[in-house]
Length: 269
Image (cartoon, rainbow, N blue to C red; front, side):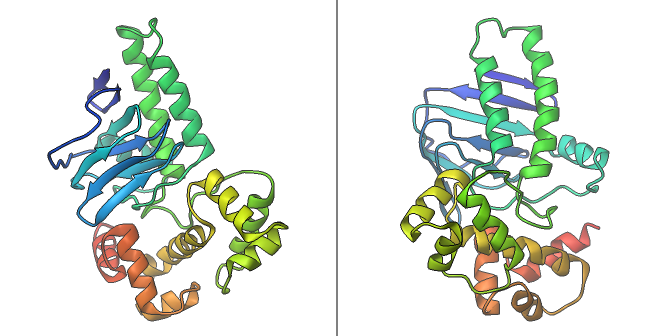
């Protein structure tokens, strides 16, 4: 099932869940995994998307779909449409570059679930689908700008959840420059480290340590883009123990070094 217009498309299918050929599209591609893990091959290695999580490919990102559990659900959005939305809500005029991080977010999951439900009803046909698509893509563009982790963010997108995970996330945000062990995080949550690791991954789609590292990276982005501070100073100021660990995470998240990221995104301003 495909519903499309000039700004993007929605695709929902239960066949052809593997691809033999590499592809790169001139649009943003958001993949949602409603049932189980999806695996996509990229030039930097395989990218897994756990159940309930989502992942965003940037325009021209080369990828190949290796495995999808039961259903493929993706949305494509044209860059010009996303830039227009960014201008309207005051974020800027540059096309965002999304991070190579798969995670869960309640607002994104709620949108995906609702849209899937509508598309799967027999009543959703013809003109009603087109009208629904227009409104849905507008909503999604705003959600991607608000909750999609990327170059336009100053910190990892907030997740409003209750319970031990929220307690830990709040503590990590308050002291993200400090060294944290999993045991210390678990003590903050009032549970053992195995319970915390499982619950944290279940609610956010990432491990506690990866969440902290990515949070540090996003907190460093304003310094990287709006100052001329050395990369080493920025890394150490934001909780990284060395510039090599900062560079390594940057390559994993953005497929480029901090220096390359600074040069590309500062040149667009």
